[in-house]
Amino acid sequence: MAESDTCRLLGFPDGFLWGVATAAPQIEGGLDLDGRGESIWDRFARRGGVAGGLGALEACDHYRRWEEDVAHLADLGVGAYRFSVAWPRVFPTGGGRPDRRGLDFYRRLVDALVKRAVRPAVTLYHWDLPQALQDRGGWANRDTAYRFCDYAATLFRHLGADVPLWMTHNEPFVVAYLGHVTGEHAPGLRRPWLFARVAHHLLVSHGLAVRAFRQLAPAGSRIGITLFLWPQQPASDRPADVAAARRADAAVNRWFLDALLKGDYPADVRRYLARRLAGPPVRPGDAELIAEPIDFLGVQYYSRVVHRADPWNLFQGSRQLPPAGPTTAMGWEIYPEGLYEVLTRIHRDYGPVPLYVTECGAAFDDRPAADGRVHDPQRVAYLRDHLVQLHRALTAGVDVRGLFVWSLMDNLEWHHGLDRRFGLLYVDFDHGRRRIPKASFAWFREVVRQNAVAMPGPAGGGEDE
Ligand code: GCO
Image (tube, rainbow, N blue to C red; front, side, top):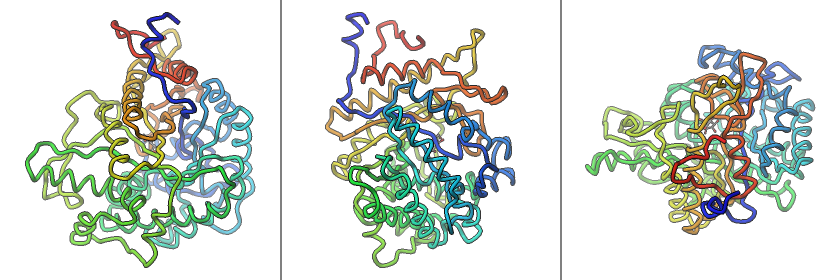
């Protein structure tokens, strides 16, 4: 390395945890293998909710190719791998006796990771509810929260000793909103009045699982939850726009942050929802349950949303402005400063809770070049610019312990199907699902190895080595 490169390195604290993330329904496939039960995403895809239909859910065939994927993780040199357990593999109908084959799959995966010094970070619910539970009302039914706790306890017992980081839920806002308000995600409902009810039951199930964890998990392993936390900003300083952005922030961000870290839902949005739709069905003791202390909070950041007041929007009284600047293949504005804003905001408004950025990444239209390699300088620039903002937050005193890139490999981007490529590994879905490390894979390996990010030189090069 040249002297000048050393000067342009932005170093991270010792022990900073670098990782990559995936989720079972987005990579595993193997829908019919080893007794796996039907998930709400299978049913949703069968009904036409997913581009590419049920076949797209075969995704990366990770259920069969997991050893190859673990080898890629080892090659990448990451300290941790965040993945989710498929509830329908462990309890095909949501409850009863666990299926040994499902548990054994995750046991083998965890053992292989531990052997390669990659720490497993397990998400319990990344959106694949057993369809049998949906048939009984899904998350709109409080009973699902108790079923979730049983499922969580089973995993704590089986894997607890080897999993240092657990996450109860992935982005409960997205489950409540895209699954039950807009219907873009499974179970595909358009019933805005269910938002607060579903969100509440998700949080109750989180609290129950945290309490079970305290009894069952070995000392030293930690539990938290991951939240979708995008800044919601006003389009102008007109009072109506400012109020609209504030309301959106309350529904998207504060609803969850306040309940988990302050022990109450924000009064403004609670009143608003109760008046226009329906409030959360809170029972005595729920507030304390939800605010059961967690060991860390997972922050998932991709972009921001800018709001213009619109009284015709029933849910939040605003509409979203189209992005002003460059976007990713998701149509999301590239706004790295937002990561700094989110991290410092949590620190300021909620105190010094340990944070992990449990997802950050971007989709671009990658394809192999004539030389067979996949050059993705946009992803490298995206990640680098976000790491710079993360570093800024660390310098400002925010307690961020690690970052997980979304994602290890191209995978099923929910209703969009297989063509939104977020991976560091390119997956050739047409030819045997071959994995090809992209240029960003090599770039991230260097970040991990050096525990530092190299800043671009005056010519702006060094991105596609
Ligand atoms: C989410 C999920 C991931 C997505 C990723 C890109 O944050 O929506 O956790 O499953 O695939 O965020 O949209």
